[in-house]
Length: 146
Image (cartoon, rainbow, N blue to C red; front, side):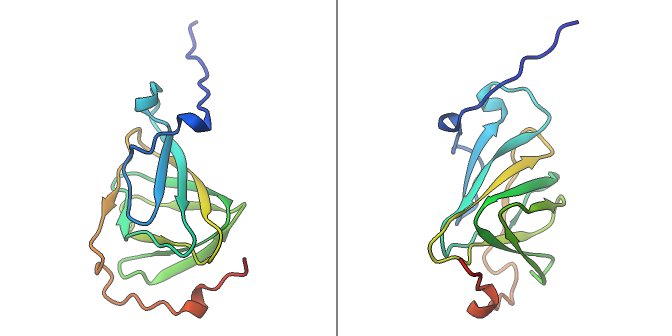
């Protein structure tokens, strides 16, 4: 019986030439461009202090993320009506087609997630900035002790 080989992808080999959303940076690790045949995609996601991503979804892809470092505030829903604060050590599941946005409430620390997607090619559908016509976030609502 012949088995596929295990592949190690070093951090220096992460590829930023992958689908992006304004306000964040994605780095592909497990993907076809690295010569890895896999039914899934894996990588690193980062948002700088005080930044927020554009509102987006991932089409047919389901996403699982592990918060590696920092805090993040996530909004989702048809009007951004749901939210949660995540911290290092938390897992997050984002169903296919769900509009969402990540916000970094920290003034001095990035947050990083390890992300795994259910298909091999990343799908990012960036929605227009006024997709949610009632984005009203008070700074106190977003405050997280750094």
